[in-house]
Length: 359
Length: 216
Image (cartoon, rainbow over all chains, first blue to last red; front, top):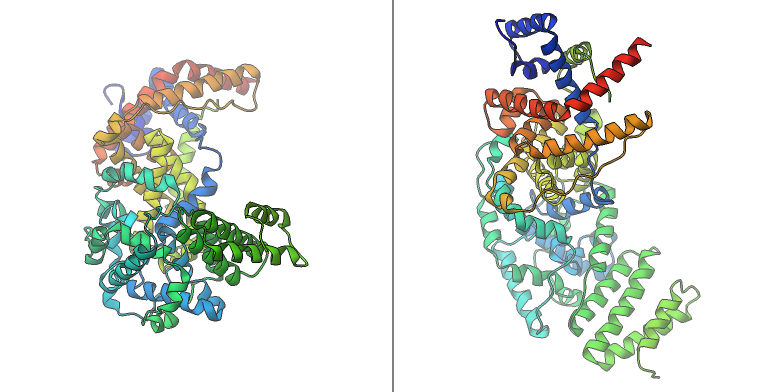
């Protein structure tokens, strides 16, 4: 080597030079103290950088998996019709309390972002023609926000019907489901334009991304209807069972028992984050908590659900002044306090005291 | 500061060459297979396993927590969507980190990113162990290094992060960032040189301490 290796030192450190260059640099370093020192310093920079901490906000890694889950949870490999049918049929079955199916009806009572059930393993019952190709999700980052909303044709019609019914007795605009954590949605909105245009095929070693028709429809579907779906209360679902329920019954069970536990937890969290700004919404929330308490009979979740149902009932009365809400809530609170075990007696007493005195 | 000798670097290279590409363990392959079949619980486990590593890759490039958070989520989403094409015999970590690095660089290149506020102040984490003087010097050196990293371009940071923290080859980095191997080489060289110059006062002291230690 005629001169100092200069830029080659970095590649030498990484063992990325050709054999000839590698030998030449090595020979030079034996002769040149300045370059040898520089090389040691470069190696030291690497070592020192590896010791730099990577600070993240407290609790960040505890909640990140849940946020990823909320965005991933969509019927990527499940026929959308089957997903919809599973959700609706499970709501019907809620009445007869079949534990496995109980898990699925959650999508009726939980906000949209949480609503798509876990994708069952392959072998689901619906026609394969409705399965989007794996590349579908690659269309763009923006589409990920809409992926949670199964939409094409039949389902969208069903959504439309539900929306109309919802509008009929819920004049006020429904609040957007808050179950999808704020940062995931807002932050995505902020950067999706930037990250969306990547050449994903290279990153993931696949073919050029293709936008599946189903996904395109999703992106175009009005978000209002998608939001309205989960707020349709369970009673309506029970009154109008969709014809596709056989599909759901024969669709694969959840792939892992832990999925069910996870879903119960997610459903619980979704309900916790749900708010009501009208009497109708408060009633729907009350009914959703009731359903949850029936599905998950074990304390403490069930007890919390019962108390929350009472609180939602009291809220329904305050918002609508419907005597039925008042009477029902009062009766439930008294029954709770009269029971042998009333773990949250103080809270229920507070509910009772928030209502006007009565019979 | 622990300064490796040339012999250390040589041994590391040999070890890397001997080990070959890191093989994923069977449990991970099983998790990935289940996740690929639609089991979100399995994918959840994958996220938990790799979230810190992916976040580290992202934040080292974008230098802002909120942006890194976006990048991490998006990287996992894309990995999830592409699992069907992923070769389960290969390690998942480098793959998802490459996705994250690509997303991160593309974000930083975007016009919107240029309008965003300056990076958040880097937390100065006190160095544990060693003598008080060493701790002060090392803490100071860390702050200097953090600032020097911020002064690099995002492209340089990406190359540096993938090489130094993820141990990717130049070829792998070139593929991940869609640049030539020559560009990888020159960017990495310039990045290291700038960091070396910034850290020189501390590197000298650290190497002197090391030399003293070895003489005793």
